Length: 198
Image (cartoon, rainbow, N blue to C red; front, side):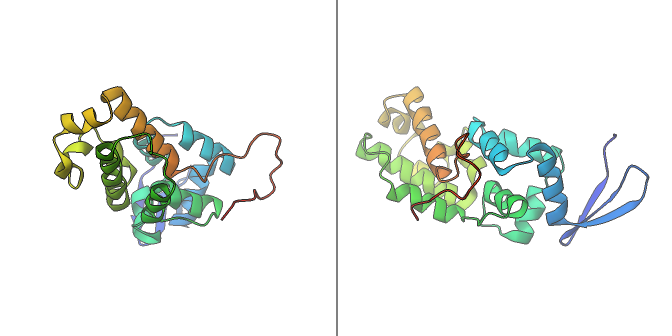
């Protein structure tokens, strides 16, 4: 079908369906339907999210498919990552705020192999994520933004990791850790609730 004109009001969406009838739906239902059209199970969504090298690209793609993340954040919670908004609204999962995700990573001591400077950069990146979210964390200019830029020039910060490839790899680890508690369930493990340690 052609482009659907969608108008988003407070907590509801109006659009013309294929027969030209005006449909009004709650923003949550509209999001759920559009997301599940692509990812009919939680596992498929988790797989896609975890596999995406750039979450920002996946988020843009979802918005093109009618998953209205911005509007949803306004309604459900601005302190939630797009990931948690969608988990919560489409798959009824309890959401974590960005701040909660960031502080879990800080507690995990994942980055012990890095020197003090690199670890400070990672802390600052986690704070940036907690404030602004995953797309800012992935932006190529993130090292030039406060609070990260207070630690030194981008070139110095990258050197603290041993070079650009090592910095990018640390950034990928950081992203993996942010969403570490939401791995797709292993094939064959049945769809029962997994025993989470917390």
